[in-house]
Image (cartoon, rainbow, N blue to C red; front, top):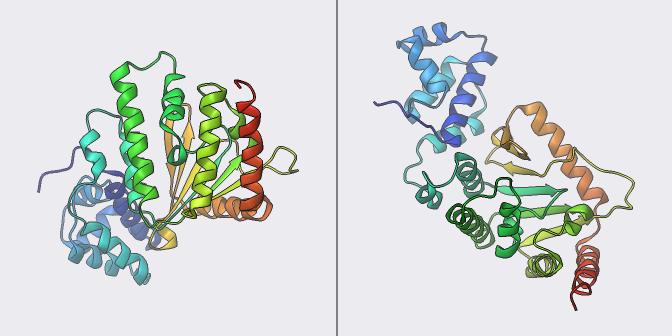
Length: 287
């Protein structure tokens, strides 16, 4: 079987979980290779996602590593059985891998939570707001790249909005006031957030400036729950692009962040009223 030159995020995640199984069992790569009757290089290839793996081999590895976490094993078996390509693949070669991997995460999520501190989450952006966001980069992307990024973001949004994945959005007041595209674009964006909340598919809750807490760091983050807790993923926006975290201590810490947000954020009705007040303020700037 030919090696994958560019394994996807989920293919790499299967490999990561296989490595964790092996390490928790106290086995080296050479030891596991002997147990399986294969070369040590093949273990490395499986653990980096460069080599595919059958369900049978997955279960053999789990048994060799004395892994008794059957829900995790079954969830990984489902992942290695996946066939077909997602809608985002048509953008491969046009957009960077960062874009595609976020869409892949969202498509397989069992629930999504976002914490936005500097701008409205991508999954809730209007087309004008998204275009203004992408235009702010220096140097500015060429028009065809800007159009592709914006179109991709709108397709991501629609995929989540028309799916069945629960989505909880926590937004800091700072993100609600950042005027990407100017007051008119922001006012329309805020109106769109209220519509999202009223539709009942997305929970939108605000953390205002006057709250005496700021859970977590200052980055925009997305927490993706998988079929089992061990397969959750944290995605963080940074100036250098997206970063992904799947170590259990990091997942536990950020589950706590969202628990704290849930306890301190305004209720959904209060949040809608708060967002409306800023919208009216923005509309007053160009009335």
